[in-house]
Image 1 (cartoon, rainbow, N blue to C red):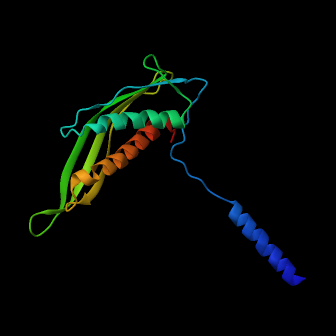
Image 2 (image 1 turned 60 degrees about the vertical axis):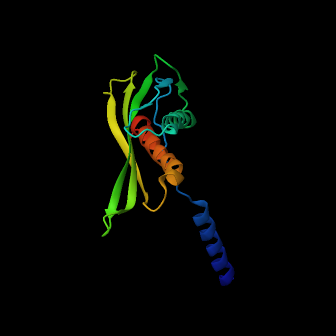
Length: 170
């Protein structure tokens, strides 16, 4: 009888532990949908000195995708309740970790976006900030072979930061 109680206790404990889970999401919008119904995302123009042609289009598509997937706001071109605009201001390579032969063993790709956000339904001051992200890669790697993947990661990180900065009430 004692053995059955122990097995039952262990089974219940296991069931309790396995049924509990904690989920963290950094893409939670805290929007009053009764007050705010529309959003305008202006086209972010690439003004970076180093121009990679697909960057502008992919960034803008990622912005629209993030906000349509994670909010119920309707995207409009003008007279929106909330407005986001800005430009890509940096896309650059920087040598890192110089070796004894004076060549860099790593290179850093950095992307920077200047963003402006305005909520026309509240008295909150507009937000203006420059958001940057970077990734390192081996200097022995041909940049063209890793550029698309690095760019995808940088865009994802910056769009996440813009979403959290504008839609999340931390």
